[in-house]
Image (cartoon, rainbow, N blue to C red):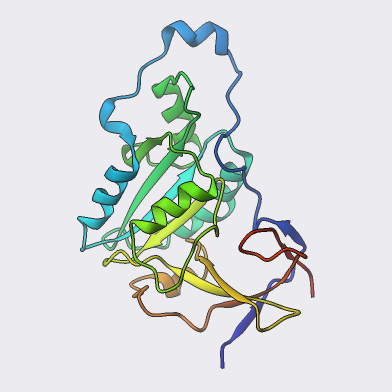
Length: 234
């Protein structure tokens, strides 16, 4: 029988504070003054779908953590400070590669140096940070999922930033099962986060389901695949 972990705090819609899919808030600080002095993005720092697939699928030696982020998103800043940075400090860097996919607006004029400085301030390794213009809507994440392997379907389970996709050495995505507290026949799979029982993630084979991690949630009136999830206190 699965061991159920029941979340004990009240949270609504998303599992934690985050920013909506597609476009993060633009910076306004000294925007007019610096527009003529922007430092352009080096071409090799742009990441598209094809390059992301090649980057991960060519590596069968390391587990990978793909972190979709924005240094101007309050949820990203909070999650890095409170959860992601502490979790990463416990991980074996000989086994893991960490890649930071920095979402920007498609029409944004970037000052690359300033962007990387702001990334560095919240704990992002700028040597492994790449610029992402695809957006982070559900359809964008669905394209990312399709490039890798998963033991269960993950369509429409993710949107916005921050968002982490964990891959094992064979590029299987780390997933876990959620079940409706009021309707135990309703279950689905979603992404496992970097800070979810990190000691069990190290060296895990994601092609095998971890039945010990199973979250009970109470969903809203719409199905979780197409709507929102509400987590309620028990």
